[in-house]
Image (cartoon, rainbow, N blue to C red; front, side, top):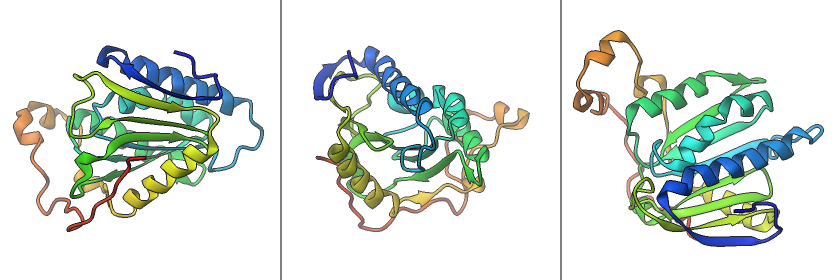
Length: 213
């Protein structure tokens, strides 16, 4: 798959190929960013709505996080589900890293009514964007049509607007809500670790956000 055409590419992608495709798109974004002088915050921002931290798109961005940090990239990431907890812990470590005066990653729980009908999406900078399958389906196990928009500022703008609508309704993840890695935690059964913290997160009542385009 080529991401270097000034075109909208919508194609059927097998689930085994999803993370590789997303990694190539992420690499393309970082390569372009590395040759830009005085990139603005908007040019350095990646926004992501994913079903969970196990989604291939989330895994691919996590894999390039250190390279992204060197380029002062900022992530805003909203997950519909917070399992598996070990991958949430990986993202929480990024949240504790700082680029300039701000965290490398801002994390929120998009526990909103009707969100599973929406689609996973990502915007990289001002001109690259991606839409995946509905969040009711597991992208790790299902083939699906995915859309890549390259050099399309209007598509990125529309996706960013949808993201902002969801982001302001999602719940910020505080340190008390994130899993703590320790020898004691490693001894706990997975079903115990997966339980929400006392006084845990509550989604917005009745709020609905549509990320379809």
